[in-house]
Image (cartoon, rainbow, N blue to C red):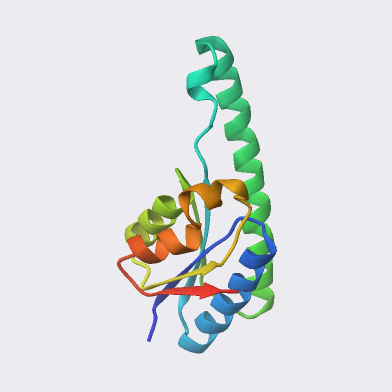
Length: 146
């Protein structure tokens, strides 16, 4: 039914629940599991001087990479322990929903699994939830996990 399942991960409890569902689906379908983490753009770029902005950008990218490695590493270990043989990782820069959809399109995913809430907090109240936006933007089916 599904050949490639992309699961969006941000380290939240909802993302961990989404991972469990995605692992179960990948196991049943014999599908490849893609673990995806989006690194949001630095929010202070336009507010800092050029030199301070460059230093902040370097630190932000380093921290974002470390978080991505931790989140994806933990998810990969859980998927392997559940018996998933084919696992890929995708780290995409940009706002979460467009980054997740772009990764799914680029990797040829035919299903996206995403948690209902993540770590975005007040940001999602103003702009809508990532899950809602992924559902609206995706070119493939989306499973939203509570």
